[in-house]
Length: 315
Image (cartoon, rainbow, N blue to C red; front, side, top):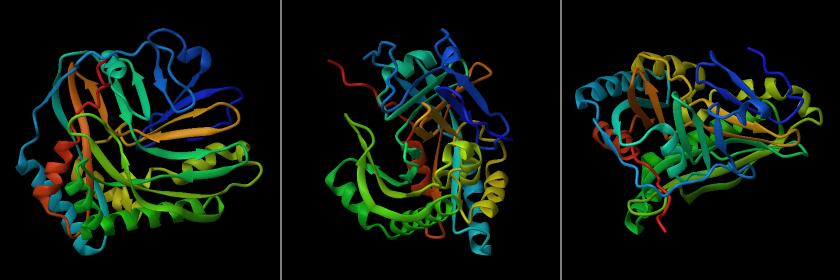
């Protein structure tokens, strides 16, 4: 697959397996019913809503999760991987359609592909400024936004090791395409959802300098960085084989990326916090990083805790 340098503002979706890339010109995304997105610096002009939208999850059986978790653990023990992101699609019931959910939720990045998926992601993949500075801010480690849970997240040995692994992986990834790559801010807490039962995550900032001709090689640069390390694992390619075995199905656009390029700068996000519509049913995709120190029950609970809607505050 080859990405071309866009001649005008464009939006794109790249699926996790890089089998179904989709590109939209400004004319196409402004066409009613085709696509909606809301990115920092490019707000969606569509009206938002404070409608109280609800979902009910039919959580997957613990046995199903334990079997996949055990397969991942065997791979970890063999040394195939030292961090694997394990995810599942959980069936849910929604009291609204995807478009209503899109307008009701609050997130750094929102994407709606009508009748296919809605995503409300807090996570940046990479940004590139007009001078060619490329940056990424991987998120690893999630907790409830309470003083006790924040402290527990920051001190947890498993979470500390997992975050360090992802930062090292992303630093190495950026070093393939940029020079002077370094971590500029390490493992800080970031509130990703507000309101009752809000969540925080630990994040880090990493950046470096692309060559002057970065616009002419934009597609090749992105492909060298995919799939996103924060939603795959390390070492990346061996871990991808383990993910395919454990999950048993393609992720599609979930854990892929969405990007907006205005001709001067690029902003992309990881497609997490994701609801898919397939065969008349809705599925909320979620998961987390598994290491040799992981406990299946705790990871199962974290996966289910992410099945939620970050609704806009009512007035």
